[in-house]
Amino acid sequence: MTDTDLLRQHGLRVTAPRLAVLDALEGHAHLDADAVLQRVRTAVPTVSVQAVYDVLHALSDAGLLRRIEPAGHPARYERRTGDNHHHVVCRACGAVDDVDCAVGHAPCLTPSSTSGFAVETAEVTFWGLCPTCRAAG
Ligand SMILES: [Zn+2]
Ligand SMILES: [Zn+2]
Image 1 (cartoon, rainbow, N blue to C red):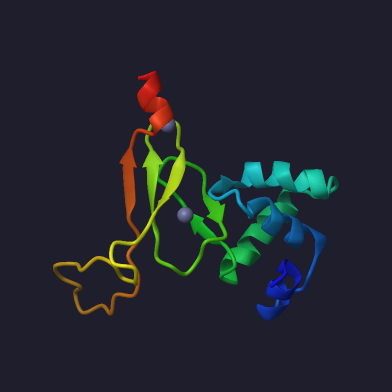
Image 2 (cartoon, protein in one colour; image 1 turned 135 degrees about the vertical axis):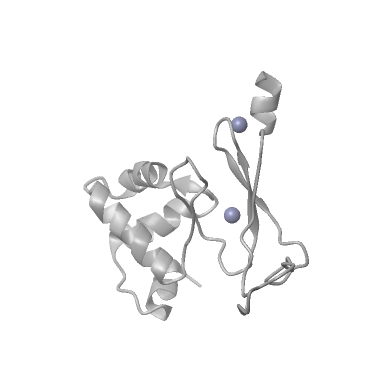
């Protein structure tokens, strides 16, 4: 499916900034808004910062993007959605990578108590040092 079809399927108008944001995140997961903006500007030089933020929010709300917000770091965006995967974050440089969910379906963790909640997903952030920072340290 093309990104044009993808936007239409989710009831979103097809615009150059939306296509450029999707393209910027294709094969480049976990970019923050600044990194997305830089990549989008190579395709749509006139796009404003606000326009890119608006697109990131619209696409996240529509479920086309997933937003992760590691504590102390700017929000990151990715196109890998709906599979309940987790993240490992470097506490030194903020590098992010994917960690597959433990059993392959959501929620992949069983809490000892759910206080009556019907649990649907589990979002785990593993913190540590990335290979680059380990080599430097
Ligand atoms: Zn690091
Ligand atoms: Zn991810």
